[in-house]
Image (cartoon, rainbow, N blue to C red; front, top):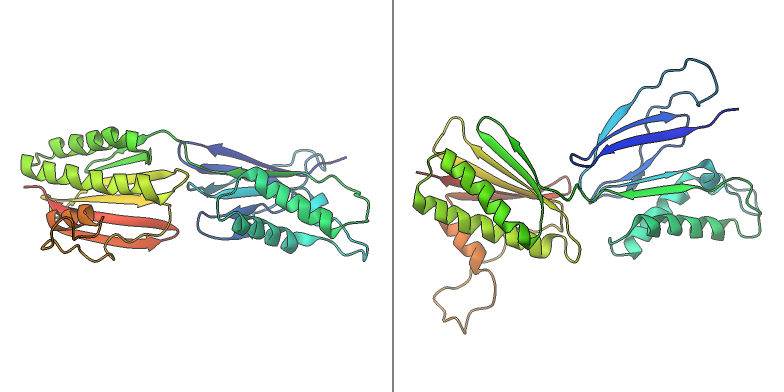
Length: 289
């Protein structure tokens, strides 16, 4: 007698998943802005097959929006009237199709039900001969702010909600006070950070919510320069791509929106944006003297 097992332990505060596989099926993983794909992990021997077996674990770093799907071989080995197996490719295709049909707003329950419906349709008329068990998990982050302190750096991971703005500004002001920032520059940075954080809270994950990571750093070779980096995993958006508003027009003539980013661009020494590995990364650069 033996059993196959995949086991994972997820640290919610960091997204670090430690896992091991004892002869079980490959897990399926979807990154926040990618497709479902088999994760071909290293297999150990089945549990109960031999005394004294040791198992090696491995780690996966999850980010908010990542999804893990696990299943038993009753899913992939379901057969139709032609004795053809459902297989892993149909299963992965079903997961991607369910996700796309839901417009990217999908729950673990939606995914498992989508695969079950696909298996049922495929094997219609053929009795089920093995258990069909599935587990889906969507990682949404820890939901709690987490601050990391290093020599000349600070990092805050926080859920992007408007009510969290006070904590964000407090986090920034503490760093600025430690680095003897002038009052004028502190006011400019407070306004800039508020504008960026509020934009992320409003639009990045709508209608859902997600996390934003804010990194503060004083440049080692240029101690008067600080960098403020925002990272979120929401919809791709480059705030620097939008044309500046025409401020020579009267308020009633100008289009709504765009003024906040315009102010940020004109008070910072530099701004840089990139979309990398499924994340929006916006960096503000400012001389604090």
